[in-house]
Image (cartoon, rainbow, N blue to C red):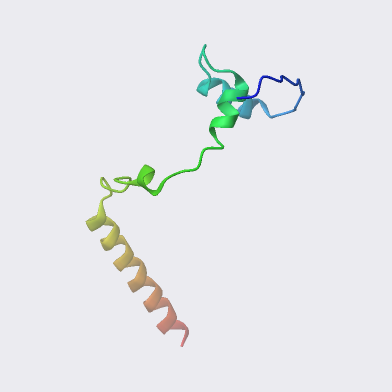
Length: 77
C-alpha cells in the first residue's frame, strides 16, 4: 500500500454511510472497506450458493406459470 495520504471529501447518502460503517472495524478505515470492493470475485466464491434452493417447488411454480401463459395465449387467438 502507498504511504501517501490524500484527504478528499465526498458526499454519500446516509444509507450508504451506514452500510460502509457496518462493514468497518476498529482495524479498518473507510478507505480499506471501500477498496475491499475492488477485489475480483472468483467463480468459486459462488460455489454452493444455490444448494438450499427448493428446486422442486421452483419447477412446480414454473410449470404453473407456463400453463397460465399458454392458456392466455390461446384465449387471445
